[in-house]
Image 1: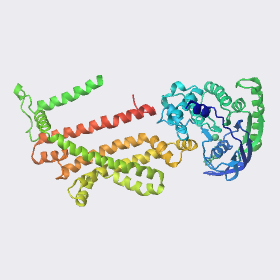
Image 2 (image 1 turned 30 degrees about the horizontal axis):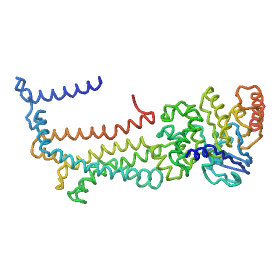
Image 3 (image 1 turned 30 degrees about the vertical axis):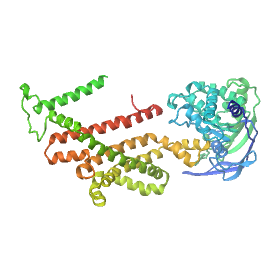
Image 4 (image 1 turned 90 degrees about the horizontal axis):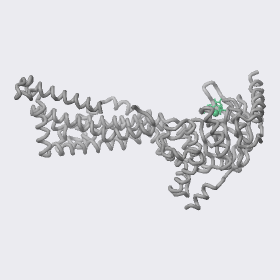
Length: 268
Length: 263
Ligand SMILES: Nc1ncnc2c1ncn2[C@@H]1O[C@H](COP(=O)(O)OP(=O)(O)O)[C@@H](O)[C@H]1O
Ligand SMILES: [Mg+2]
């Protein structure tokens, strides 16, 4: 059993992702909206990519397409060359609101996805769940109720829940935007730590440029109406990065002005 | 503790007043009863009645008969009501048909079914069960439906990304997520079931067993008001006990888990 656990925890599956000419339209009460307009993007195995842009530029829509929760109107999303047709255990999502289940305790939540993973006994699942709670520093709260946790603790548990089934790709949709600055800073450290330890492909959506530069190996800039990818910025600053670092601030500044350029051009 | 003392004192005073006004303390020189025992018997006769008939086994036996009817009818109501409520929440066509029917029939006090039930089933157990089921079913159905509709969609989305199929999501996500509504519906259903059964037992005599409500009915026929009041006490006690034993723990658990509720 020890060996199997070791194998489970020390497997580092990652995946390559390609988005090819994806378009997506929505009909809203105020008429049709082009959420994504001919979006193409390649993401390498184990890469940490951040999507940045003002709200309404299709970041969540693209993330949901990768998650398999939405289907593109045209174009394709592929994982390791296979088209995505629906949700799967190889891709886990962490939402803006924590989406933890209030009828389960902390460990019950982490177990939820694990329970649907075959080839493990319940005892092994419990061990795996404990390991991930430990990884996000929430092992002391395994039997707490969700409502007893602070916002930051909830997002840690949500992170453990999405890590536990050991997905190849972790999709995070503005996971920290409802948290205060102090909590967020601590989580920046934690998430970088997790990425180094677990070596996952991570796609992280945010509207905060600094956050994107602090976390990503690459920042992908979106602009709205219609939702398009405008520019991409590689980030090669050394890790662990501190959000208050000077070089980081300079790069953020550069990206922010680029972003302003695109949104200003649009409002003309 | 203080609140418990308050309650106990209040009820003790109430019974004391009743005892004084109905002449239970006349032997101490207090006034005789203001009313004839056919109008309001003193508590001592009521207590005597309850004591004698508990000792000779009549009340326990009728309680057994009544509780059996209640439980069976209630369980059938639940077993039908929860899944039908889930269907009504899930499918618009079920909502527009069965959901509307439930809405209409819920407005009908279930004792109104008694005349029809007697014609359809005769004076049998089935007639009583039918009335209990009519009392339970609709409110359980509606509250289950309401509960499922109030589940935030993000729970189902999260479950889907973790590999839950539609059935798994329904049973392990949507149903527990609506538990607070379902439990309060079950509680309301229980209250309706209890009321309808009492109404039906008072209304219909069934040869297959003498329920507690039938004692109340015969108490009236025989002008034994002490029997009527004694049985009323039993009916209150059963209602209260069920609430404390069955529903309070479930509600307390839900409040603890969800972080809702009072105090
Ligand atoms: N389910 C939906 N129905 C209708 N319109 C939608 C839906 N989802 C997104 N949209 C629209 O698509 C556009 C892009 O939305 P979204 O991907 O959520 O942007 P972002 O996450 O970048 O803020 C917005 O204009 C939004 O109104
Ligand atoms: Mg969004």
